[in-house]
Image (cartoon, rainbow, N blue to C red; front, top):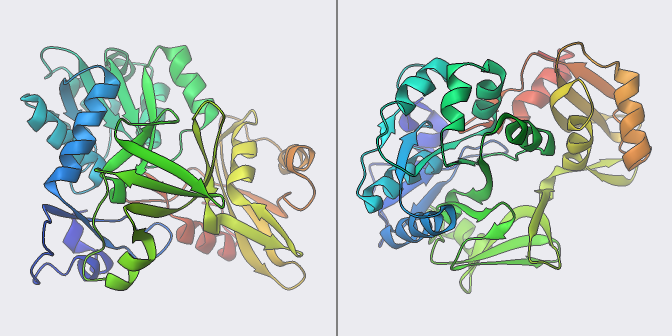
Length: 348
C-alpha cells in the first residue's frame, strides 16, 4: 500500500501544504496503536543514522531493499546505499516470498552484504528452508527491526546460521538506533522513570503540522518514547514494551508485553498478542491471541505457564488461536485489529 492511499496516513502527511524547515522527508508512522503521524526528518538525521549503522555492522556495503521504501527501515536501506556508493538490489513482486528474496539477493555483487527485515519476513525464510534460507545465510548481517525480535526467533536464526542484528528504533530516530541492546555511536539513551529517552543527531525535529505533539515528545535535545525499558550495568538497553501496554485487571496492572514473551517462549507457540478487553467483573480481562507452531498447546497449559512465571493476575482469562497475527505497516502487530477479532469471539 502506498502512503497516500490510506486516508489516515494522508491526513497525517497533508502533502498539499509546504514542508517544515530543514525537512528532507516526511515519514508516516504505522499507526499500529493509534492515529498515524508525519515524522519530520532532516538530511542530517538520515545521514547520521546510515553512517552509524555502517560503523556498527563493519563498514559500508551492498544492500538489498526488502521492505517498502515509504517506511523508515526501507528508506534507510536506500540512504545507506547512497552513502556507500553502491547500487541496492530490489525485492519486487507482491508480498514476501522466499524464492523472490533469493532471486533479489543474487543481484548483489561484492561484499559485505546487508539487508533489513521485519521478524515476520525472517520467520518465513527460516520456515522455507530452501533457496530463501540459503540466501539469508549468505548475508554478513541482517538488521531485524520494526517489531520486537523474540528470544526464540533469535535462537532459530542462530541455529540456522543466519546472522541477525536485532534493532530498536522508530521513525522519530531515523530507523534503528540501538543494535542488539547497545546504542549506535553518537546516540544517547536514558531511562527516566522507566520511560526510554533518546538523543543524538539521528533525531527527527518534530511532527508534521502538530506543534502540540512535538512539544509533548521532543525537548532539550531529547525524544521521549512511548516505550518502557531498563539500562543494565553493562550499558545494554532492554525494551520492556510500550508504556500503554499495561492492562489493569482487577486493580492489578500487568504488562501485555511480559505475557507475550512468556507465551512466545512456550513450545508450540510461534507468536502471541495479548490485549485487555472490557470486562464487567475485572474491568479489563487479559486475553491472548496465539499463533501455534505445529499442534496447538492446550489453552490450560499456556495459562498455567503464565501463572507460574508472572502470577495469577497476568494469567489470560481466555486464549484464542489464529493462523497469523494481523499486521499494520512494516511488520507491526495491529493491536486494534486483534482486539476487534477477540471481541467478536474469533481468533482468526
